[in-house]
Each structure stands twice: as C-alpha cells, then as structure tokens.
Length: 274
Image (cartoon, rainbow, N blue to C red; front, side):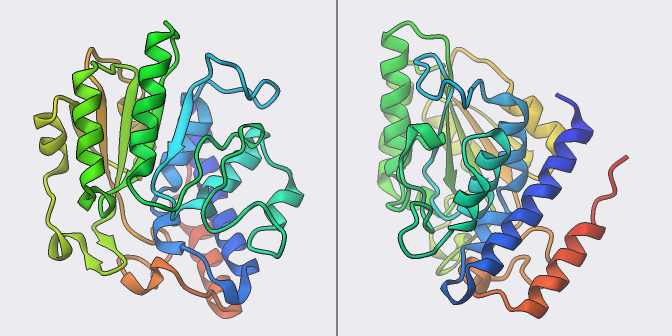
C-alpha cells in the first residue's frame, strides 16, 4: 500500500463527502461522524480489504460491516471509487426513490454487507459472519466499524463476549472514537473509556491509534492475532472542517453554499502530501 496514494484517497473521500452532504440540501447529512471515519475507509478500501467488485459474492471475500450507520457520506464514495457504485448512484443520495439513504441498505452487489441504522446490531451480525466463515474454514477476515457512543449499547459487549468465547481470530472491530454522540460528549453521557482496556478484558487483542494517521491505521488493520482484534481509532468529529470539528450540532446538519465553499477550501488546503 502506497501511503501517499492513501492520503490522496482520503482527501478525495473528504471532498466527496462534503459534496454529497451539500447536494443533500435541506435533508442534511451526518457530517460529523462521516468526516471522522474518512481515513478508516481510505485505508480499508485502499488496500486492506480483499474484495472484488467483479465478483462481489465471492464466499472468501473479506466482509466490512458498518455498524455505525452515521457515516455513509464517507462510505458511499469509498464504494464508488472501488467500483461497487456508479456516479449515478452517488448523485441519487437522499433523493426520492433512491436506494442510497442516510443509512446504508444491504446489497452485496453494491458491496454493502449490512443495513445500518439500529446501533449495535452490526457488531453482532459481524460476529455471526466471522463465526460462519471460521466454521467453513475460509481464510477471509470480517471487519466491523462501531462508534464510541454506540459502545453504550449492551449488545456490543454481548457480541464481544461471543467473539472471545468462539475464538474469532478472523474478526477486527474498529471503534471510531471521536468523543461525541448526538446527546453530547461520550464521557458525559456514558463514560466507557478506556475502550481498548475494556475490549482487552473481554478477550480481545486491542490497541489505540490516531484514527487520522493512515500509516498507523495500515499497521493496526494489517495485524493478525490468535484473538479477535479491536482497534480503537481516536478521531475528531467533523475532521478537516474548522467549524465542524468537535461540534455536536454537526452530528446531522444542513450545509449551506457558503459553508460548503469554505469547507472545500479548508480540505483542499489541508495536509500537504509529501
């Protein structure tokens, strides 16, 4: 994996996400949690995932389950650049009759493994997938993205117990740990930190990384272990846009034309690639 190409990919995803949100108009979009996951999706679709849009139902494909449903403005562009979606699919985002809503709708042909929306169900689904794949003797991996606020849900921990019980060393849980949820700071709503230690106590091989450092993400997501893996990716909600960063109100918001132009200018000028 070429790190400069991954960084360029991440910047493109961030710009694509802003465009999707802006075109969504009065419907708004989940900007904060979408922008915090950009580098995670860039690394996964930039080389980590063993998937092929020409053979989307390959039994031995890697699976990515997006349990944290509020990040499709980064997810859909990644699927588009990987060849699973068309430009027409992207342009239909949040329009009447579209299959591409604020939460993803399961469609294997589109590379979407799980219908998002009800938080914590995705991780239990991923555990089931990992268990089934392991019983079949497949060599693939199952990745699942959850939010730190989502980890307030009891089903997350029931799933973690099951993953450890059944020794699912083909499972990697990625926590988008941006410190905010709709109701406020995660530390105030339900302080579940430190998440890496909690997952370790449930039998995971866990680590903390800077969720916007592509090199560290590549290293963490390439890791193999005899245990299920948890990567706690510390991110910034609304990353890359100054007036969105760490602002709860941008969990879901309408982007004006003036704000869109400012956001694009900031992203285009940020993080010079070397």
